[in-house]
Amino acid sequence: MYENGAMSTAEALLHVTISSPKEEFIEHLVIGLLQEPFVWIGKERFRVETVRKLDQPELSGDMSFIMLSPLVCTTKREPEQYQQFFYPGEQEFERVILENLCRKYQVLHGRPFVCESGQFGFAIDEAYVERMNGKVQKLITLKEGRSDETKIKGTLAPFRLMAPRELMEVGYECGFGEKNSMGFGMVKVEQSL
Image 1 (cartoon, rainbow, N blue to C red):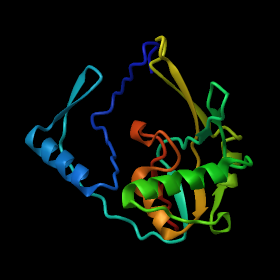
Image 2: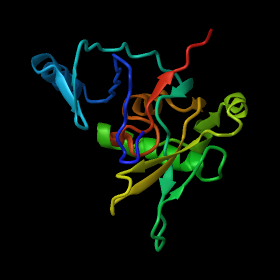
Image 3: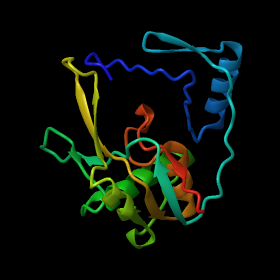
């Protein structure tokens, strides 16, 4: 990444993954890309060569995931001015992640989802953290150098989640944690060998 926030790559092909619980959104996106197969990223124009729908994985109440983008977990308490970021293993982390998934479920389905904390567990892959020498926290700077610059802290590491299947589905389709509309919290299912 350059100082001005621009990115560059020598790769001939770029792969972009998009997820949404709203089938209609995905259908409209695909139709639009088929009708006008070009997208702009920054000042660069790219031609879309293929669009394909990935099969939904079989989800259960105990899953292992690989983060494709950092998971962001925050809370803001009054009268504090700034968000407080939480990381796996911290006392508030699981509660905040669970409440976030339940809010998303309610928005999508129009009814609350009641989940007791005993039905929910999040465990980061400690072997991965060790291999990375503990460096799994990422700091992302948006609009760098501008007056509205924002720094977002997240975690990028495989994890295991124990939760009701309905919440697994919400997290898989919407993203886990916060700032999902900005691309944070996207996962893929870890395939056992």
